[in-house]
Length: 413
Image (cartoon, rainbow, N blue to C red; front, side, top):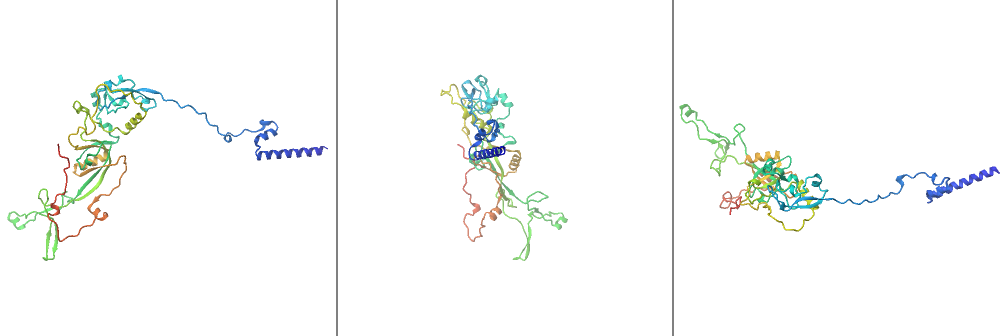
């Protein structure tokens, strides 16, 4: 009996084990196993946290912005304006603003009244400490206002223009321009460093011995060439007359045009006007604000609240816009460029090179790779056909006709 009981017990255990396996495989899960195993839930091992279903975090409330009072310009104020209380207004702006969090703004109008603007301030713009000076002497000690708009690593240079070289006066502060230059090459004597050909004066040895005037008339050095029609060797020299002074035209320059300077920034068109140089009632229009300041102004404009619709009391410091007071066309433009480019421009102006400014598209920062343009380049690569000599022509000659043109600068009033 004991052997039979032992066998039956083994069979029961085998059937129970098979049942557990089937339950786990076909959806019973661990809950059934827990019920069957001795000890219940304590016998089931812990489940890995990665296998557990993710639990969404409890949403938190979005913090509200704190608004603080900020002194804001109510009207436009050019450089050199002494601020009056009527020029200001208090607005509440979020404390997340960079200028506010850094402590660059004012919260009381009394801290700004009677101060002098160092830069141009637009309506609705928060007044920063860096925009103000204590006195006109303080402004002078800070240097030129224009220097504030020259990028680090660049310098400002003046470049003469007219209607042709200055893109028809279409440039404005903030534009980018390229400088196009033309050079005229000639052959020179390496020892004399003078234009070729050299002049010769032959010596008559017999007259020299007699003490007379032994030098023949001066001639230009040319070349010896055999003339078949005369069966003689002749000296061939340059000819023609200069259209400027009537002297002999010894050499025709070879002209080459090339892109010389790229991405020069226009800081100002015309002569720069300092606040101290203006008469009463006049106000300069400063150049466009630097990119960093423009971004800050844009951010402030998006976050600011509209002021109450009240009439602006008192006098207004209204600046005149660019070119509003222009009595004549500008003859100079101020450009910002790297120092090496400024040296190249200086050399070109001192050498009298013909240079024009080409206006770029807004935001175009491309670096162009160009090929110098000359007559051989136009003929060889540009497909230019050289006309054949003709046995007839027109009167007057082509070099005697003045092409249609207009003066480089418009006539005065």
